[in-house]
Length: 292
Image 1 (cartoon, rainbow, N blue to C red):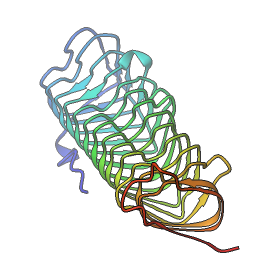
Image 2: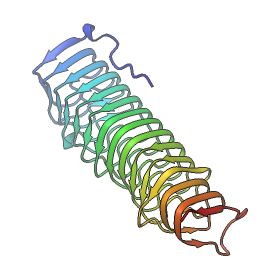
Image 3: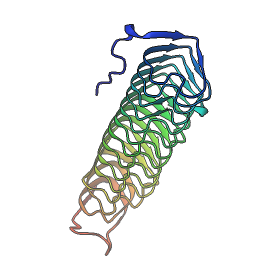
Image 4: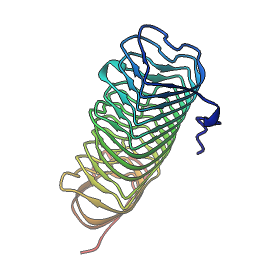
C-alpha cells in the first residue's frame, strides 16, 4: 500500500512559530508547511485543505483535519480538546505523534501511522480503508477498528474491548492485543506471531487464520467459518473452544476443553475434555486428535 501525502515538499509555503485560534483558521489552505505552530481551541482549523505538512505542532481544538487530501503529521501532539481530529480525509502519514484525543480517524482512506501513541483510543479508526500501522500503541481502545478494510499492521499493542469488529482483508504481525470480543464478524484476517487475551475471540469470523499465536480467554473461536490455526498455543482460560466452527487447528500444547466443533480437524498435545452433545450441528464430523 503506497501513501502519497505530500507530492513535493519543496513547493510548500512555510509558517513557523505561529499561533491560531477560533473557527476555520486556515480553511481551504493548500501547499502549507507548519512548524512549531499551536492551534488553540476552536473548530475546523484546517478543513478542506490539501498538501499540508505539520511538524512539532500542537492541536487543542476540535476537528482540525476534516476533508483533507494529502498531509503529513510529524512529532505533533493532539490534546484531549482535539477530539475527532481527523475525519473524511485521505493520504495521511503520521509519525512519532501522541494523540490524547478520542474518536480519531473516521471515514478515511490511505493512512499510515508509525511510532504513534494513542492513550485514549475509544471509537478510533472507524470505516477506514487502506490502513498501515507500524509500532503503534493504543489504550482505552473500545471499538477500535470498526468496519475497516485493507489493514496492514506490524508492531502493535492494544488494550480495549470489541476491537476489529466487521473488518476485512487484514494482516497483523507481532501484536499484543488485550480485548474482549476481538475479531467478531471479520472476513479474511491473518495474524502472525501475536498474543491475544480476552473472552470470545473471533466469534462469527470467516477465513480467520492464526499462525504461531498465543491465545487466552474463555470460549475462543466459536461459530467460525474456515478457521485455521497453525502451531498456536492456548492458555489456561481457553475452555469450550471451537463450538459450531469449521476449522483446521494445530495447537502445540494442551486445551482445557473443546465443545461441539462442526467439521474439520483439531490436533493438540492433549485436551482436558471433549464435549460432543445433542447440540452439535451437522455434519458433526470433526476429527479430534491428541498426542500424549
